[in-house]
Image 1 (cartoon, rainbow, N blue to C red):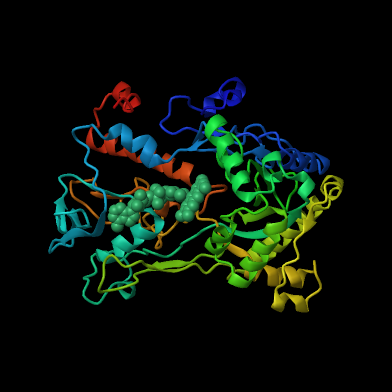
Image 2 (spheres, protein in one colour):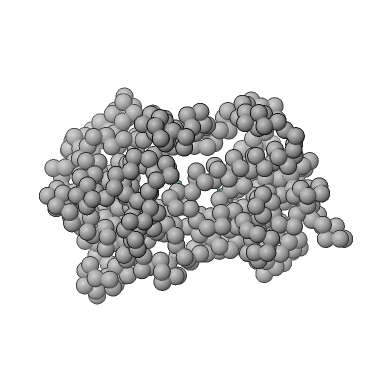
Length: 469
Ligand SMILES: Cc1cc2nc3c(=O)[nH]c(=O)nc-3n(C[C@H](O)[C@H](O)[C@H](O)COP(=O)(O)OP(=O)(O)OC[C@H]3O[C@@H](n4cnc5c(N)ncnc54)[C@H](O)[C@@H]3O)c2cc1C
């Protein structure tokens, strides 16, 4: 944690200053965007939370802490793997994919994992197998992990390819959960543009933004679309400490070149991206996402091909199939409307961007039916996918791994399984807020479990210091 305000005082115990990945408060650049939104929060009397991870209430508004170090995004690959690269017992293969796990099953039905088959596109290299002496840790993420398990014969018989022998009948690829969010668009009057956006020539404006970033590591490119503020509310119980909807606020400066691409990446229809793009030619846009934290809809991950092990899996998201999720998102829009109608927002000239959606035009604007229609066109997953190989008790018919992250019914040594899953696929339910930090916690826990299982006499001190590579 680089944010000094959080590393002392009563919350200090919740944060480490020596971890491998940087977390920091990217700040609000002191511009119109941050101050106006904060003033509106205050007008609505939302709590201000300094530290969302300090055991206190998590409803209210807070600065978003990001994996950012001096204006630069940090990734696990960069922060952790590069530190390991010179270790003699660490090998990293690039451009290489695991196709399946090599599994044997004895006459007595004992299942053992022996290695993996991999495909590589590295020059002078062809597909090969890797043998495991002890165990295999599968960490391919919630969608690829399910795919690899299914390609290895672990899953429901109906989900396996005809030429794959079923070795374990487990509920792989079900329970795919993600947060669902609806996106709302507003226009910001030109007079509120930050100084660098007021430069009329677009190329000169981009140069000014780039210069600010390169010289000071500040400004537009040091954050994610100027988004530094988050509002978390509980729509059922306003005094609850736990949010069921989280709003994120982003600003796309007037004539943002990448806006069209971002719009398409969200998966919106071209006709709507065209409307948004045109509006962005004249105005900066305030984009607000309202994200449902505990969606009830869940989907599936199945194999996309029985011929090509490298083919993408077939993902059925099933978003919005549960009425609960739609009703919650509608409530979320109503709450947001109140926020957007504060005196601060009105005085600052922030206005709803009226997108022309033919089907929804049949309904009165701002009615429940209109929102129900709007949600169909402007909702998408929030990329926090989890749950496809969920952890559970041995009697839970849907569980794929046990409390030690071991795939059920795989054994090698007495009492020790030799196939573990260590990624977001094991989350039994989705987290509140983004998922990566929980994936990190799962990995930390897995490291402890592996050390305990393999080296029961490993001293407590060594265990505490095991980051000393
Ligand atoms: C588009 C997108 C944007 C996101 N943005 C944010 C964000 O801004 N903030 C945030 O907090 N979270 C964000 N997330 C969520 C975050 O990335 C995930 O929660 C987190 O990465 C999950 O960790 P994981 O270990 O389960 O899987 P991953 O991080 O996905 O790790 C899986 C790894 O396995 C590798 N892999 C996959 N298949 C194979 C194979 N067959 N063989 C070998 N290797 C394989 C992958 O290349 C990857 O490196 C985003 C996710 C996505 C998809």
